[in-house]
Length: 184
Image (cartoon, rainbow, N blue to C red; front, side, top):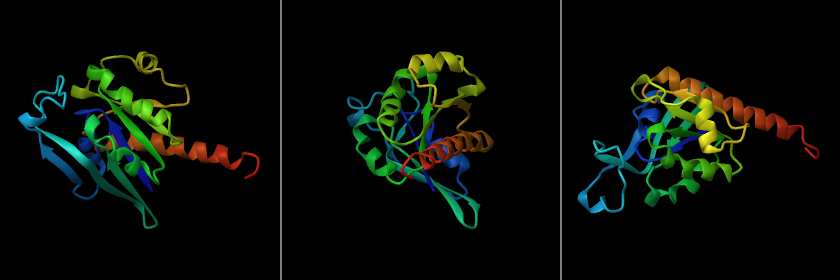
């Protein structure tokens, strides 16, 4: 099974993949240079010195017959062309959100709203805090009621596991509804 972790620049996608992966994650981090400064908007993430240029990859063995492959997307617009390839064959996606820079998550939310792929919005609790109530975040993002919104800590394996389980429940619920549809 395959899932995708998406979101804006610096929200914690690479960290999330690494937190849950049972193998050392494959990352395609590259140094941010002064040449990219005019292209890449770091916003408030001024201490970040690398960026994902293709994908992150991790793996979790559920049992002998089920292995979960986790792909993290690049967060910068100029690498957005990778997303279509990364979601091919995915069960669903986690859109990771940093509420300190809420505008950075709109492209990811819009992307998955226009794809036939279940997704969950996961608000990353930087410094262990939640800056806004989930209902307020749902309203700000204009999320439909069917899209789950949860809090997580991208650094903590158990928190990431809980987020993945919400996504898998969402994907299973959608599959069950579709299996009952006429003509199936």
